[in-house]
Image (tube, rainbow, N blue to C red; front, side, top):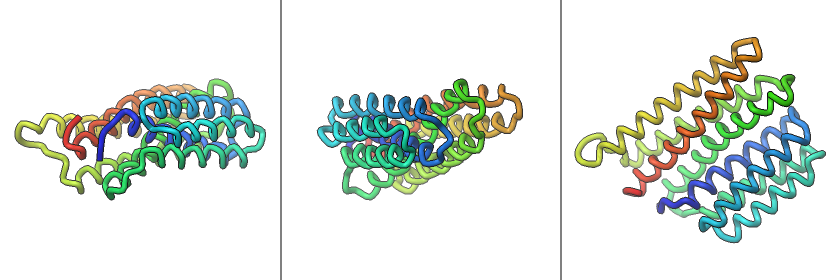
Length: 226
């Protein structure tokens, strides 16, 4: 597989589209959140297209715009975001098994944790949103994280000795730190007061930042370097 900005950006954008489709399908948000999701997916998608993802990514941007136009229909906007997710994934599709597995795990991991962060911020607009939605996204992100490190381990790319050991050690540290942050999100959401949601949102923001490191370094290990 070839590591590139387009690969990371399109993986992230595909995850955002999938997360937006899931939240719209749950019918727990209004049109405002759908417009926010469309703007984020469209903006990130435009960056990925400009970075080299090509015309398929631009079609994905158009699908995100369609999701915004259909904001008053949860089913229609959910379908539009799902289509956008598939298009962004297709824009960086590679035929190798490891590359496909990492694309799927990255979509699940980055998508769930980023959507959790966005939805957590939306609690500032609508404090009546159900917490189970955030907890579900946190659980999905945890599954994605486990899949990420499992694929890297199975591929034999994680080296912990010799001159190339530094990247492997850094990768494991980031995986562990990200896992702890996600556990912190889960624990914070069990706090009945609103401050629990605020804490969970802050922790999910930090987790998103570390998640980018996990995804980037993991793929560089598999690709054999940056």
